[in-house]
Amino acid sequence: MPVTQQFNSENKTLLISINGPFNFSEHNAFRDAYKDIDPKSVSQVSVDLQNTDYIDSSALGMLLLLDEHFADSRINLSKCSEYTRQVLEIAKFEHKFNIT
Image 1 (cartoon, helix red, strand yellow):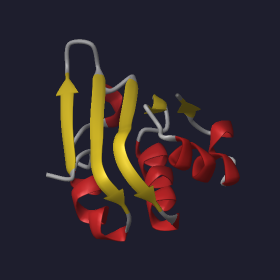
Image 2 (tube, helix red, strand yellow):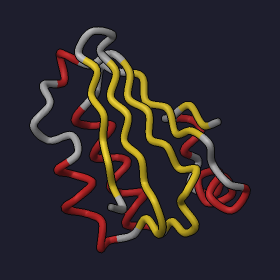
Image 3 (tube, helix red, strand yellow):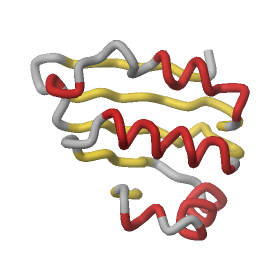
Image 4 (spheres, one colour):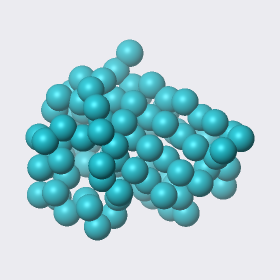
């Protein structure tokens, strides 16, 4: 499955993992990974991009929607490949997200 999520209510963390290309075809699956989770029940969101081999502008928009949904939570974009990191830096996402 290209998009998976794990929510831990005890430590208020949400982990969303993207496997393969992160583009518009993953829009519904990505949104479904978080839409039913109350933003007040989450303090940290991590998007694991370790197995993401491609990211496009629609994925950047999806990340902004995630940020809007969890406006009071810290959002980490983790395990980025060099390519993914370059795309995120070109879009200046380091000003909005923690990128590792």
